[in-house]
Image (cartoon, rainbow, N blue to C red; front, side):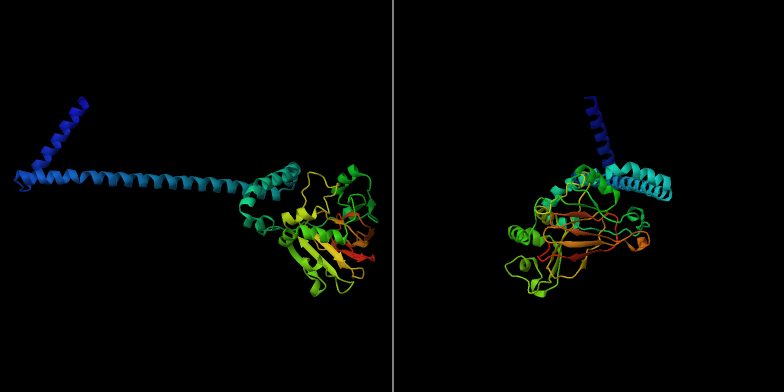
Length: 349
């Protein structure tokens, strides 16, 4: 009650002061004074609302700018810290080995978890799958290949046959040495099986085709190859590259993941299918960015010749092996050319 009376007294004093000031301005008529007071009080409320809205807007802009400034400051600090840590690690050999030794076991689980978390996003926004499945989105200008170490192939004169040793072959994969396994593929994969597969999953396979090379113009698409039409010559060759998730999943139905690949190893999406006539000339397998590459023989016979890379020509020898149906071969550290010669009277898959 006392507060209200005090406000009323202050209000009355303001009115008296305003009346006195108006009277000093030669406004002696009481009606004119009342009219001026009324106009003053009527225009006061919108002014207060305008000032209140302006002050709220300015306060919001101030807080937003302060939040953005703090965020940028923290990001710059974190980036600078990580950048200097990176420079320290790559310039200090002992620190680099320590980090790689302790982080190696976390790389695969981390990348696999990240991939699983992004799958719902890829299902909702399908156009992102093209970026998700690309080999490289942004090139690193500071990347350079380390000098090739030739010790894994120095003493190799023939391929080790690890058929019947599933436990030993899974550990042998990381030795960077080539070997052969003859019991990983459960059945022969014929050209007829490929036709049936394409008939059932032609949409996924067509969308997953990254490259399709052929030796004959009228036999140069998956639809032509797997239709009832046959090649005009027995020396035809087809190279079919697949690098999409759905298509790779389809190919895995006939060429499954070998049992000697450890479960904690990621398998690339990239697949190559080679179809060759009985009189086809030799060809070279493409160079990939992966440390280990396996070759599976579905039908026919192929002579695989492993040539060491150029820096290791003086240290390593050429190794060859005859692949029969259902055979798997790991090329290992032979990072050079792998050329294939056909020794079959049937179409080779």
